[in-house]
Length: 353
Image (cartoon, rainbow, N blue to C red; front, side, top):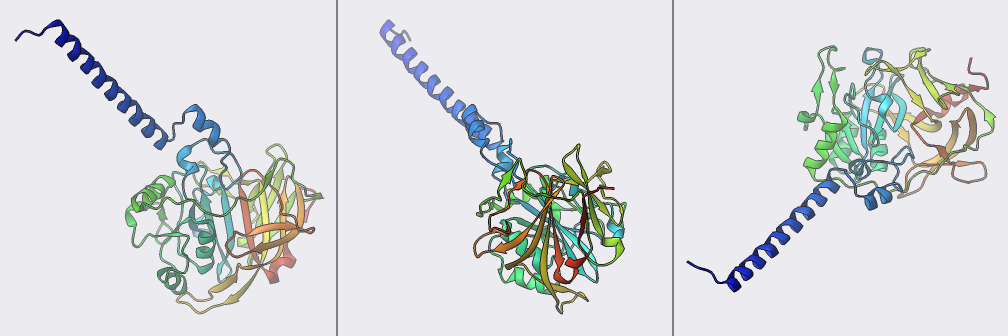
């Protein structure tokens, strides 16, 4: 069949219009796909510079900027040392568990950690911290009171991730015996967030950060006592790194991944009230994380005394003696939740050696 010149022009124009529409749709799809995978346009990158992670550092990855924090219970029994992943955490809470044993709640947002563990069981105060942060709460079972509270929905802001019900996102290593062998990674835990379709960010405002910490009293060595010598935590300021190196039981505390030393920009010692509680774990304790109390903030080789407060609907904040919120140095923060009766054993000195 023969087409006239006019018909050829019409068909050609129609073809070009269809092609232009298809090309536009492909470009639109690619832009959306790019923003979802963390590769940013110039405008997006400029906007992202204003976003900061839990440690006060600006984020350069859109996926991390929009992610919920990951709050992982990590044990500190001597058989669990050295732990994996602590050097990559933005925040680490250290507290008593029971019988003088300490335990960590490590919180991740700005960095990837390929191996995190050993992961252990929940305590009520760990649930409370995870809820305060709007985090994914990662644990392997828990004390009977902690599990009952989680089941009742007492912590509406956290996303509960118990290994007993979500085992596909965990793995066991062969180098250690149970119960010291359950591990995961930030990649697996973020995959859980996507699968649960619950990627809400925390609603609290950030802490305040500064490049010039206001503490004036020299504090280059800090010693925190919880119970027995094997659980004593200490920090020594490294002026070259402008951070504190962490020691555990008098020895450098290293991350099992690469045997690298653990450093922190800020150390916060927070006095808390504790009391014995009856659960299926002997010598368990409860902990008051509401209200307020005494606090000491260490950064840049100096100390600033103050208080902590937790108002309803907000996260825990730290204030100087004039009532101003303390501005922290940007970087990893370790928070030592120390029983009131042990605060008298907190020590610091000007000399690191």
